Length: 275
Image (tube, rainbow, N blue to C red):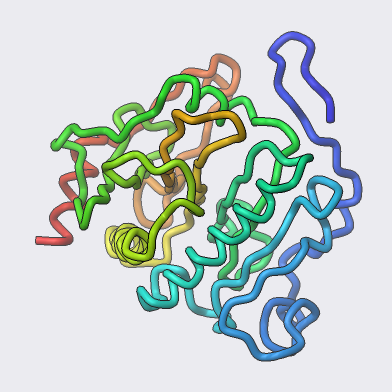
């Protein structure tokens, strides 16, 4: 790991990942009978064969054996079982002395860098608290209660479009009462979480009448962070169907962004899908 001397940006140099598969054209390694799934399964997790970090701190979670499915298309009960696995993985990894923060994330679609199309996510366990995670924790992040950007509220959970989005689609999901992490969710919380997560991901696909590329990640507590509030971020580069918004040189250079999509208008469009 290296740190930029001027901006303090951390960069993991991982030469071994140069040899990992890139959009395999023969047999999918995540389908039943493939390299990582020789036996039938419903949900499966395993250590990443090409980890970004050492010491078994990178895992892969296969949502389903159905290659052409997606998280949004699974039943609520199935998604709840995935939430259970996420919670178990979080608890197990956070019990390690060399882990300070656990991130669960999904890249869906080649436009956002997914190298295998089969529906899956990854779990990274960091031996430190990443800078962005630390900033959100130290700022005491709380749910946005602005009704103009609210998409849906369901059983104590809410989803909304954020007020200052970098990406055209930028949605957050969270419980309305403070819960620190996935492992702290009770049975009803997990069902409610599965329900609203499916709802939001379906809405994004309905918005563009397509399997929309997106990145999703779950923010949860780090060790010694009692103020944390579990939340999910879902972002997509699409500003219209099959039309991506690319981050420009001026934005990379300055850290200031120019988004063509109005957050309040997006929230209204997504709300209308539920009316």
